[in-house]
Length: 318
Image (cartoon, rainbow, N blue to C red; front, side, top):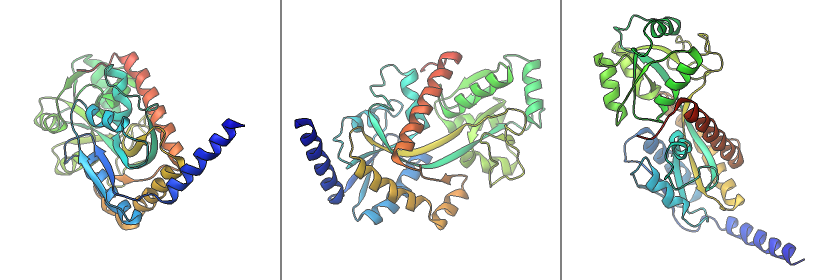
């Protein structure tokens, strides 16, 4: 009886909170330095959602330790819907290779919504004698361990895509990790490294200029920006699907009604035709999850899949 009464009181309090929410500005922590895709998209969506909520969403950058500092700060915040965290694919992967990460992506947070997906290209230096994925695989098998691929670091999106590629093709290539994406791209274009997996949004211009050759797209559907470029799935790597994603999460325990309100406004914001068009032209597909629970489940599946790959491929933190 007491438990029933307590549950009713908590439910009533939760509903009351949601009805008056938000009563003050929100904080959105971006655990990275300003300027990258994640920061840009987090701010763009926050600007649209703040209009609908009638309260400002203050974006605060807290970079450091592979985004761990800002992430842990949000995990320890009050679960009242006033502190949110901008997340990307890395958020779900870091705990598997950084034992001192200090957070559990699925246990310490609840999903609010996905906000965008960014496909990757498999790009190579034009001097590499391969004009298709099949030709690249043949080249890699002819020279095991010699064909090099650049990444922005262990466990990065490009690294994971390359590990999946090697696993599915039975090849072995040389990993050349960098401390950022910019220099890795420069060295692939310069011929110091043969290839890499890179986001469409950052490599598209170089592909168009001829400085890079794109062999395929990492998603199951072709990129609207390059409709003539086949996917890796179409070229024999059945089911190959690796995409960079961004979203919002909140501390575990945030009321469901608050999450639902935030999700609804995000879904409206990212589906606006002009908003979608503006970002799609840059290779970024704005899209919301079907529900907060759906995004929570997605984060968990991403974390589990990467943990398995990290064990099999021996991926460790630098």
